[in-house]
Image (cartoon, rainbow, N blue to C red; front, side):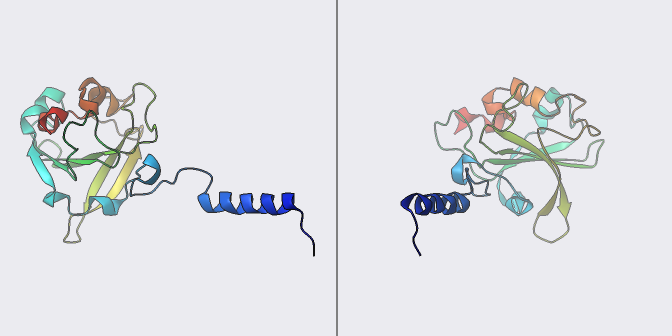
Length: 182
């Protein structure tokens, strides 16, 4: 059986593209500059570095009357101008007009959410606790903001983006999480 060099080269290229997937992988470990968070990535969030951000909640006009705690899975490197891809920040509000709210922002990367009024590279999620004894959660929604039937903070058009972009600090509003603090 004879094979031409061109046929062998084309076959090898096809196999290589098939193995590589033709583009950057979307994994939960940040390979390829993209991080897609899964419910497991939030497990144990109560043990992460935490900050009481209750004082800033009324400034944002949301979570009024709540105790607000923000958790960050890993602090940014010293001198960072932006949060690195893979950053996970969980905001938990309890005791307000809504008894329990659990939202998160994840630095997804890959240009996600970069169209104005988006917060470049950030993905927004609402979580719900799962009674598993270890801070397990499930993802209620994820994306550029809440679904159309669930306005967040009273903003039916842009959800999380409008306020977070206005905060500066790479769209992270909590004053204790100012990049200049690290």
